[in-house]
Length: 289
Image (cartoon, rainbow, N blue to C red; front, top):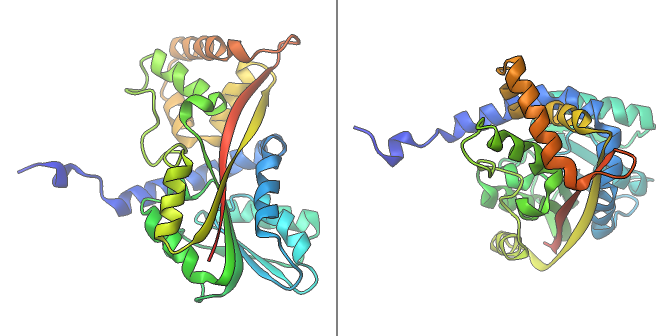
């Protein structure tokens, strides 16, 4: 006997598959980190400004990846303060440790933490920061309730998600090419996707339901550079294991066709010098515990 309940994917299996993809994409994120972080610096700066780190405070960064946003806060926590940089993927944390050492940061702790089950004490932190993490949680309500639990009264959370997919060609150009080539069944990315928390109304409701108050939302426009369509292809392979795994199954004819379709999709964002600048719009929010 089958039905919706029997056919539904097992949440633990989904979490394991998601973690595996992040583990395997860590090297690619490290490879492309400088370009990505330069492009997204306005979001990182907004989040850090929103939590207003002070010397002596203890701040938790969730879904930190290879480290960037939290490291900006770490400098402001000195003297006496600590950043806990966390991620569900150990490979991401390994790169984050190396980057912190390179930056000379001595007040950063590293810890594997799942968004939905935060391994920390109640009211342990003065602030929590999460750049593009909550939308990937299978149980976002639980993730935000946990965030509220580990914040002291009066503490603050700052987070970033993405607005609707149509406003983010930087992420959707290669997806559109895959769809046009018949390599994926639908244009929209399957959930959990970067675009699942795309509106202020959705984010505000989640935060308020988790016990947060004084929710503030804003949008930040971004631009992502690519030298040419092949560079865009390479960046996507580096950062998306789903894309890389699919590409690995293609023969040369299919690869050539896909590259041509990516060039066609990227054409509206070409600059006179032949490079590309693809737009994106992030949704940022802050709230008080």
